[in-house]
Image (cartoon, rainbow, N blue to C red; front, top):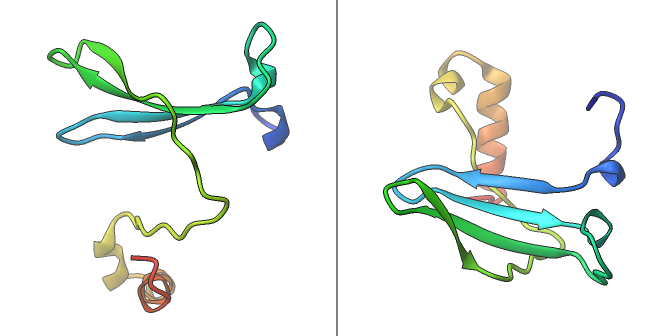
Length: 97
């Protein structure tokens, strides 16, 4: 199961972006692949052909060690939740956008 596991025990990581173009960024550590893989890999696939087939769109994606990401969900909740409103304003003032 997934409960009680650490990040070191993951065999893959996937981030999806759904919209006019649906993509997945997939990261695979070397130990999760068969053979003599020496390094971790990260690549992008895009849903193509009337959304019936995945195609490699970027064979190598290099991730920076640290990055600011701004993608808050449900911004309407900032009207009803003062703590969430303060958090979103913090992200904006620290230029996570």
